[in-house]
Length: 251
Image 1 (tube, one colour):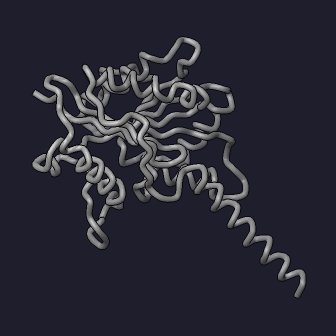
Image 2 (cartoon, helix red, strand yellow; image 1 turned 135 degrees about the vertical axis):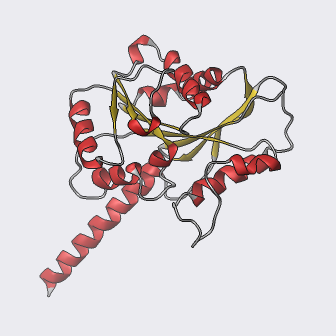
Image 3 (cartoon, helix red, strand yellow; image 1 turned 45 degrees about the horizontal axis):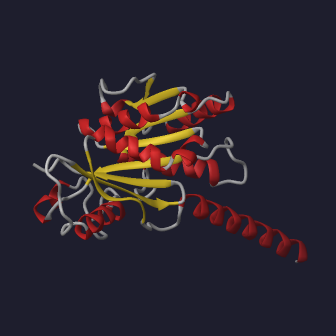
């Protein structure tokens, strides 16, 4: 009986420790801590450069970055183009990998194309080999594949594979930058790519992210817009995830 109790408490303790570790690393609930408050930028590239400038030390301390975009949004690719151009030579990343769902990318030099959703196990093993060789990697993919606020995506698979068991696949911490369009005014709310739906209507599991973007949009409706400049903001929504929001230029 004592042995059974000891085994039970050991297993329970392990589960609790793992759960706490994941929560501390990624953040258990969406919380919004402004890093770049609602501001205006000369161009998408200018916004990307400011993201790097604001988080330079944290970015440079990681060997794996996930950069989210909305497919077909050229401005989003330009944001990360400005971000990458801002990296000092000593802090450049060795590989920029894009998910094939993004199609042809001309704005950023891509070293390799993969499919995160179709082959997650293979990608995890591939990342392990690259990380073990001390190389730094950037992965460009749809925000829907990357945000921890969305269920059943590549990020949730990798998080479970690395931190969901007592034996980690490989020892790496990563940063995720989700990126989305937000609404400048009420009439633009339908342009937000993630719906704010409650269960059971949250079919794709993205409501948590959609509601957060909608809330951030509404908070800033009354703020003054500057002509011919792009509105943008950056929030920390977990200990290892940031949400970048960007809108069309004000005419």
